[in-house]
Length: 582
Image (cartoon, one colour):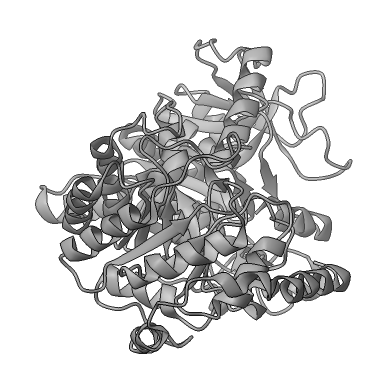
């Protein structure tokens, strides 16, 4: 908001002072102020209270400006908590819309209650629910409040309109409830709460309905006297003038809550200076989801392919993270008999040549937006349920440390190759095993696809073959028995024929990205081949392309094709790309 606009609002407040003198003065202001001051403020250093009810009350009564973020489902509630918000707004509009219904009480209050129960299960943060009009008269409100308390919903906001409600931004001069009748709803709600900290917010719709500032203040005074813990003043003007005028004359008689959907350009500092208690971001998660789903659906429909979408949307593993699969895995380990899981070997013996970045640490430990390259690899593997992880280190090995990861040393790294480093971890090549270079990044879906591709030895290959890389860049090029078709319905198997850095462009069918999977049988074949290469005097200097080429001559080595969405870090330019990629 500009200085000019703020001055304009000050002028509006000044000019309104005489007109507002008609507001009823039969309310005991001293009593209201005492009630307000009895609630201790929440300091910045305070931790969340023991109950959700107390947490919401402390947010509403805190001297600092608080923010509640909209959620409409268990998943969106988890996302809001993950973002760092201290409280949630369960929006009537977005819950109804997520059910495919209008915001006109088409969803019954029990259906809304079902959604709220999922939300409360998904987050520890307190929830203030949009209770519309209370779904009827005082009797409906008191039953609603009892059921909300049963489900640990920390508060409700009810508006002074008639049931069934109409969204505030539809039409003009919507009829309002009689003040006395609405006060009865408020008293019934407060009398029915089973926790003393339950918060009831009275939403004043007088400004929305065109009844003016005098009426808005008169109603707010009456509602607070009836027991409302806070007042929500609503406006559909495109600037905050009405809200700031109301706040000026309200004088913090009770906490003031606002919903700046229409006057979204107003900076939050203006609300702080006006003494606003709480800002509700009312519907933006659902609106963001609609935009994303619409664009994704359009792209898939038009392209008849996932190629333009996969890698730009959240991975399936992100869903698993949000819904708590890690907790289930932990519970399975506690309650179910043990079962074998995949393990991983990360080959990270090379120092790399990235100037000052690799002077004191190897390439795998360089910083990529606050995490080492190695940590990002381990996080990706852990997200796929792979917990048993070993890193083969060599150059500057003392700098390669990571909690929960086993280390294996190749002290001859300067004179040996990748196959020898893998042989150092021979004991780990047992059962289902993932082998990956320590200097690569890739999207989660690539690892998911590798794990799901059938075969005893499976290699992930970029069908584009790294063609965009500068000339002379080291590449593990492959020849397969059939090329990548580009058809996502094509489920015919592809086998490795050979792998080398010297395959001519006309024969090359892709580039191995440094990611492989072995089944238990495949792991046995790999161990046998490592022993054979040792007997042949080849192991010490051999690279993995030679190992896989020898394996492909004896056994089926399967190919999992991808198209981009990965990166190997060889140069300073790659480091910059990795920081954008992460």
